Length: 392
Image (cartoon, rainbow, N blue to C red):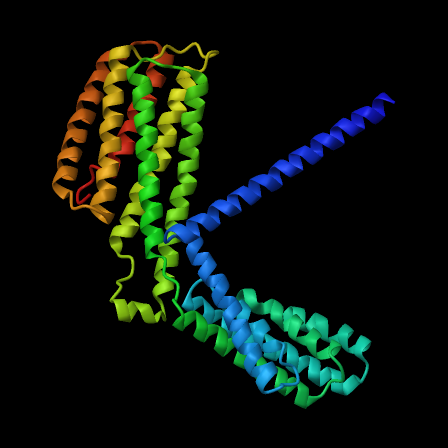
């Protein structure tokens, strides 16, 4: 009886957790729809691409199926919808690969099917060959369509050269429609996304450093708070990786894109790559700073913590680093604040020099204290390394 009640409670709890996850997903989807409706952004871009994919499939079917009554008209909208890719270049590249894969699978299946006149035996012979063809590196991620094309030939009625030729023609027409719709109807660009993600990463780095600085300046050495800082610093590295990916997407989205010439859009330049490098340094060494603070804040660690005056000096260094990061981001992707950035970098250099002298004077013969001060100084040097480098 007790076991049954326990099982019931576990079942109810599982249903509750599942419902909470479903509700959370629905809420997130609703927020995404509101953002897509309210302002330009990633959500609106995804919605537009979805509408374009549906439009491409509709056009392909209206021409091939409704108007021309093609014998295998379903192939055209099927190919069209999957080729409304995230960039025009990717639509073209994947379109060529997909057509090659479909053609290879179709030709092999047609030849073997007409020779053997037995679908089961033909599938046993053709599918291993089609799967191997799909592994060919030049077909990339579209290689799977070699096996798909072969299956369409062998499972969709009698095998004939005429039907297979029509299938290839429909695939070609669908690819043309998909690529044309993606290139001519609001072709996707991601320059805005790159700038936004880079700014977000810089702002998060700024906020983390300021929070750590405020805690050190007030003498707070709470292990739980330090752990939260470190978790945010670790997540910052993933945000920088997203920024790097966004820059690459931006470059690809301009390739073969008609909007580039019409709007005279330059590709992301060296400033984007430099920003990613600087933010990557900031992410790595911000994680190092927060890890050192977390270790010093641990309750079971006997090492002494830096005294309040030294902690305040270090906090001042972190504040100036945070300000320099924000100004760096603005100078690359926003306001013209190069003079402010140079002044901030000069102040950061002076503060780092004073911090080195202060840490050297404060160090004692206690090895644990030497380790703590040494780690803080090492992370300070590395954190400021890219910001005070020549040309930054």
